[in-house]
Length: 95
Image 1: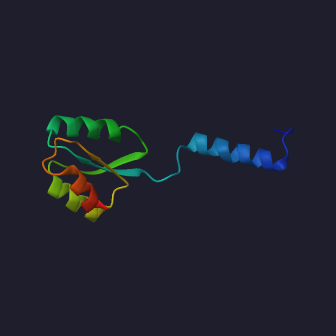
Image 2 (image 1 turned 45 degrees about the vertical axis):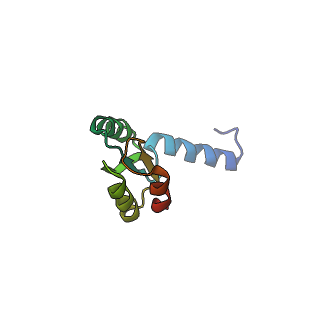
C-alpha cells in the first residue's frame, strides 16, 4: 500500500475493514402477505437466510397486511395476488 496516495490508502483500508467485518448497514425490513401458507413459509425462509433482510411479519389476508404495514412500517411489502381483496386498494391503504 505504500504506493498509494494517503487518501486512496485510507479508502482501501476502510473498504477492507467493511469487507472483513461484514455489512454495517441496517437490515431491510420486509412484510410478506399471501394466503398460500407454503409460499409464505418458503419466502420467509429464503429471505431470512440473507443477512441483510429481516422479515418483520407475515399475513394471510389484505386487511391484516394493511394493519401490519401501518404498525410496523416495513421498507418492502411482498403481496401475493392470491391475497383476498383488491390489491391496488391495499397498496393505496399501505401508503
